Length: 128
Image (cartoon, rainbow, N blue to C red; front, side, top):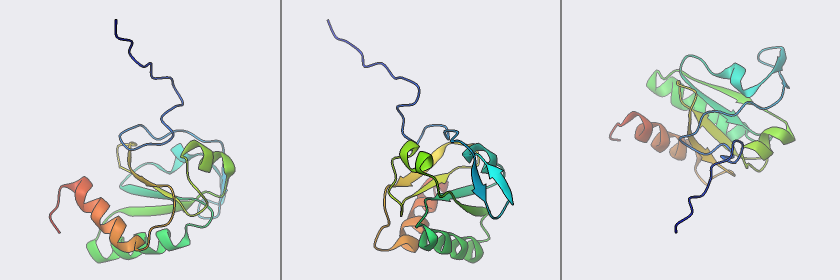
């Protein structure tokens, strides 16, 4: 008899193809208020970075400007966020407009701009 592994709520750890997980409120300088990860989803893509994700955010802004892409960034400096998404302080999560995680990097890559460009191209089904 085969046993199926049960999928328990909360075990997805922010993995691609899963809905964005709500993580408790954290201060957002952009919003000027406390926000949840769910609060930043809306029109376009959202790149959520951990506390040391400034380079990810810069790469995302460059990509958005170069390709007229609706892509906003939000840094969430919160241990609960990093734990829920299994990130180190330099990690990032890209959320699709439909609220699903499209991609995650636990830590900074050697070429974040290239990584994001390839990721967006793959998600959108574009050939580079």
